[in-house]
Structure formats: structure tokens, C-alpha cells
Length: 121
Image (cartoon, rainbow, N blue to C red; front, top):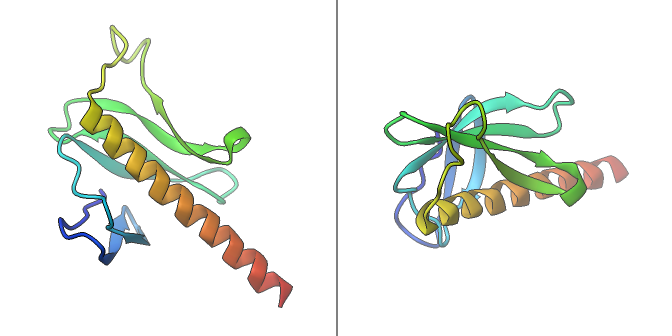
């Protein structure tokens, strides 16, 4: 579960499952209604997957995975067999999801750049 402090402009170590990531807490506060649960790595091991759930853990809303064609993490809402209807999101939930997507995409790109620059030297 990702838990970020309420203070702005602060760097914090965030534990996501068994993985720790460095995230900047600027403009990102604790999500009010949802949580992000780390599931694991992709088959290739290059990217990660998170489950998005309500804080009361009553509903699994979707997954966050790397989407190669767009070269970023993307949210895929669960629907169809899991829900009787398409899930509906209000602006704060969408904002929290978007903030999380931006942070993990930035971290993935920095990690990839770090690996490339390390291999060149």
C-alpha cells in the first residue's frame, strides 16, 4: 500500500508491497478513497503491477500496468464479469489515480535511464 505524507515538497521512501521506491510528495497527498496495492513484477521483470482498491477493501477497481504502446503506466478499470455495471469514478479518485500514474511512470523512466547510463560507462 502506498502511503504518502500530507506535507508538500518532501521526498519520502514509500513501501509498496516488498518493494521500496523513492517518490516526491509534491502535490500528492494520501488518497482519500482508494489504495494502491503492489502485486508484483511483469513476466519480463522490467515493470510492475498494482491493484487499485477502495480503502474499505470492498471493491477492486482496476489495475495499473505498464502500457508499452504509450510508454507509460496506465489504469485499466475492471468491468464486465467483475462488476454488473461499469465502475463510476469521481474527480478525486481520478486525480489520485492520475497522480500515482505520473509518479510511477517517472520512476520507471528514471530507473531505465539509470540502467542505460550505467551500461555505457
